[in-house]
Image (cartoon, rainbow, N blue to C red; front, side, top):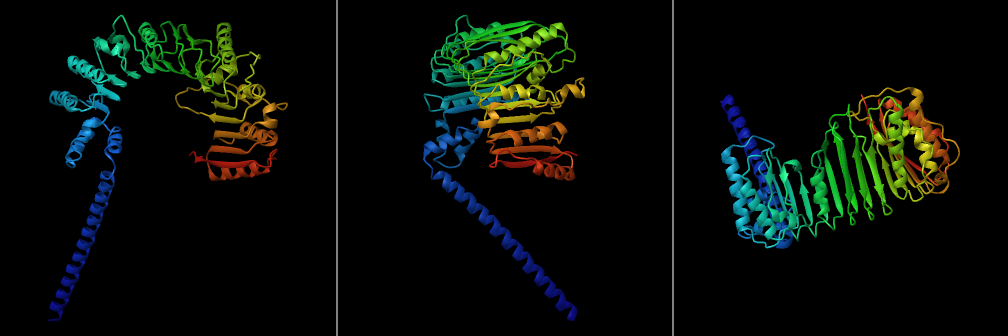
Length: 489
């Protein structure tokens, strides 16, 4: 009897425990459902215009799927002003049935979509797409007064886009991400309202690129990107009177032998320019009196020896600075800093308006020109030094004497009255870096803040560095120092 009573007691406890677990589980699920309902209620309480705006950031397939939520949501998808379609064929193999389903989906969406004016039409598709239907979709978007078209077409053979695309009067943004050398364009191109243009670049599509740019009289933002054949010559002129922002990313796949490349830029009201280039391109700048911001990372990082021909090219790249002396913001990447390191030109220009300077340094290349930059920027307020040990850059032959920090002598004007912030990124605790930190702390008389981001190998090394840092004299009583970073093992 005693054993039986014990078993019954144990069974009752087990049953009660299961009930408690089930109760807690159901309570948790109920709370989750209540939370979801509250979220749904909050979203549903928003006006249609806000919900449509939120949906405009989603792919169209996800937007259309919301129609099953309720009667109210069943029509909202048709009022979203931006359509985005992707067949995903560039990411995975698509069966014929999937491709047909995708094309039918686009057809149905365009058929039942309500708006007569589209804000954006974005399309990404693979080489097996039906080009007749593709052109029909673009035609529908243009007839609905679309303002932005973004096309990523993974093509393998020559193709044509509808002619009305190149004479659209409502188009403000056009992004073409496919290879233009396979694109057949009409003889006449006129996009009277286009302000933003993104184009891919190859060595064989320069004429087509210039033709597209020439057909955009009010173009303000130009983005050119791509890989070029280092063995082919290249010459291009970018001349547009309304251009305000220019971004060029040009990378040569073959760097051992690089032929002559020249780009002429004529933009009288250009305000911002970004040049990323490893092709030894000679940039000829004209009429850049309005330039405010420049990021320049051009040059041959892999150069080991400086012969007569190389010195001439380095001198020409060095003279590039004289055309951008009116900028307020200047960023010089590691390729450019190596060019300046190797160049023996001492006629450093003055930057009277420069207030923000960023420099990229790798293996010490660039320290040698820092004194010249400080002396040539009397109104400099912010200095950012980035030690970029990028794995994409192969090590070059150098000596310790070449890359050591040149002693900073004298007192640049900016240190006396303007320099307020110094940022050092990628600090490793090297002797030259400590000298540099000590120099800025001691001589920058109005410095408010120094930020040091380190890549030190151990906590003990960080402790030693902090002790040295506290011992450095400060020229500014208001200077605050912030140290952060990560330990490299």
